[in-house]
Amino acid sequence: MHTKFSEDIVPLSDLKVNPGKIINQTKDTHRPVLLTSRGRGVAVVQGLEEYEKTAEELAFVKAVAQGLMDIKEGNTVSLKDAKKSLGLS
Image 1 (cartoon, rainbow, N blue to C red):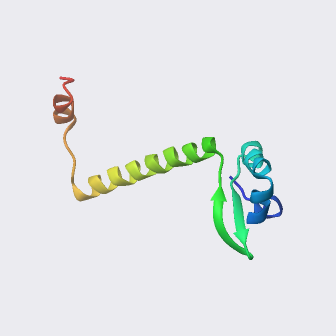
Image 2: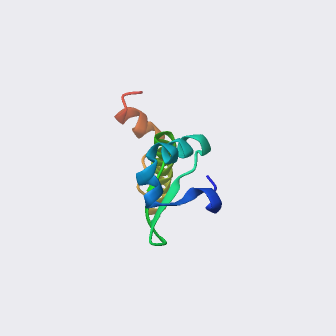
Image 3: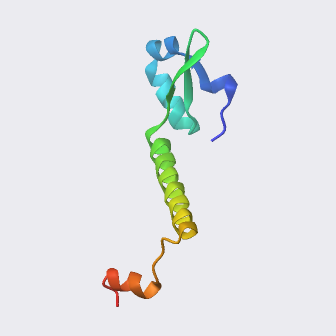
């Protein structure tokens, strides 16, 4: 998801005037739009599909990081014990 500064940064007033255009832009480009007020970023509009994808990817990365930290700290169980606790043995 690469931001195109010439297209993806728009004044908040543009959203007020034509919200459908901004929403359609996020759907068509699969990129978020940065809304500005007085030249400063104030919000991001992102398509729902892209938001959900990003949220799932973030959750996955957090789970992997937690798993690696658990291994580093010795918070592990044997495969046999894992299967037993899951009722697979």
